[in-house]
Length: 123
Image (tube, rainbow, N blue to C red):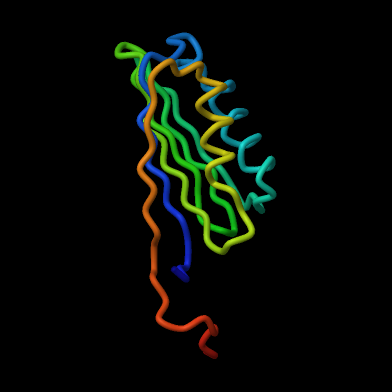
């Protein structure tokens, strides 16, 4: 199927609680994952919650990588969306899963923007 992009929704359970609450560590994990797949980083923002938890987004020219953590539940929700067919969002997902040491994880892959034709319309 010819589509605009691939969207991965990750459920990361039984993660390292300390990593989930470490903003610099989370930021580095997402930025490194974006770099590893060859994405073009255009910006990022992260926030540390009190008493615990981190949320963040790495904006890439090809879309985004997002995370929200719940250290108290050893859980993280991750969202990876890449446009085009030159990227491997599954590789970014594996890197993030590994960095958070998730012992139980799953991913839902959604193909976004089905295209009826292989050609790109002129705008």
